[in-house]
Image (cartoon, rainbow, N blue to C red; front, side, top):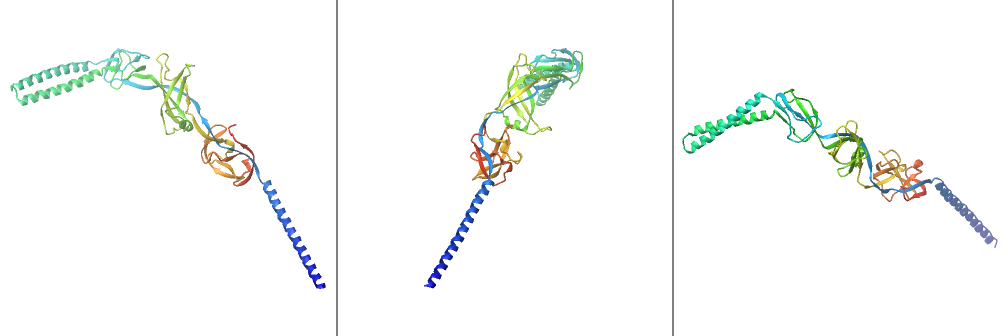
Length: 360
């Protein structure tokens, strides 16, 4: 009996010890779990998030420049002599093939008249000998000699005719006489500049654009042109050409063409402005505040499972508030808009504000 009692006391004591040990271990695990929970909560960084969105973009910009004639032709003398007739003056409009001035050259005139006579005589001789040949009155050698004489006379005539016509200064194109370098009595030689003709029925403006502006324009974009000297008047223009290589200043040259008005035309040298209106397109944008780092190496934080994941994106400026995302983001991505200053990759975050519309 005494032995049974001792055994029972030992069992009860052991059970109490096990219970106490179990209780202490459970309390420790619970405390550690609560400590970890408190620790994790304390290290969650509060952030504002939102999603990238598409925006309808119709970008307008304007550049200034000066007008130029679409086509400028230098008219030169083709002969030597004295200007005896002057049929135009500066500012006059001329049509193609109009006579502008005449040069007196007695030598070319005499050569022309003489070659014309010889050409006529050689032509008659050839016809006469051909008739005789049909009657077998002349030999083949006689015919060949007359034909050779005719060919030489014909060549001399057309050569003299061309030289004689060079005494007449003819307008090669239609346009306005903008400069006259000679006058009555002036002596000229072949190659002497006499007139400048400018075609201003169409007029152009050559402007320098930034690379960003150059990428926005194409042959289909709408252009409105204004002239500083004609306030209130607007002209429709079109893109005529654009350079794909930057000039020394890092800009790209574009040529804009417009049809001029006959009454009160825009003249070369006047200044004006071109307003570009690009086609409406959709662009994928996010606020500039979401960008971490520079635009060249742009990064954003995307929230996934309460973690801020750093993502590299490709973006270009859109305006002062937003950037256009070219690639690297999905429309469903939840990006950090504010509070990312202390963020690191995979840091725990707590969303305190979710902006459904980032454009507001």
